[in-house]
Length: 140
Image 1 (cartoon, helix red, strand yellow):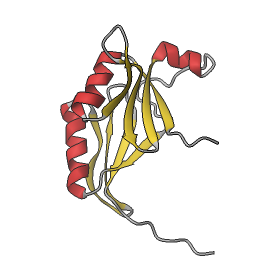
Image 2: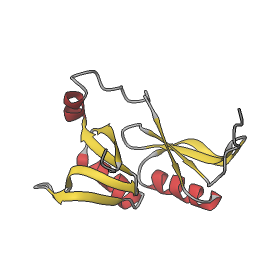
Image 3: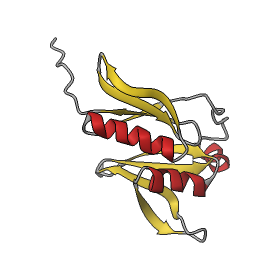
Image 4: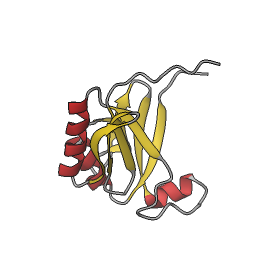
């Protein structure tokens, strides 16, 4: 199997607003050829060497998933968790999301499993941001 990045696709309502949220607001690096609307097509962002985010207009997302219903606003089918590196980096990422028009789901703070905060993007997708931590090793 060829080593290529995993691509997480999320349905979106508006390409320009989502591009601005992720690219300008959060500072993620866009990937792809520029389309007629001036945005990359497909609309993807580089998250790390093994992961990309692809934003798909809702009507196109329904087609991709076999015309199944897309989750309504306020219903999350998954949580995307990323590591920011430090507590201050978690605070900064959640702050950037709020300034870009997102909503805070969980204020950044210490939890039993580490320092974490969560935000929802413009389409209600939940992102959990954690500081670097080393999980305890489970021994059989």
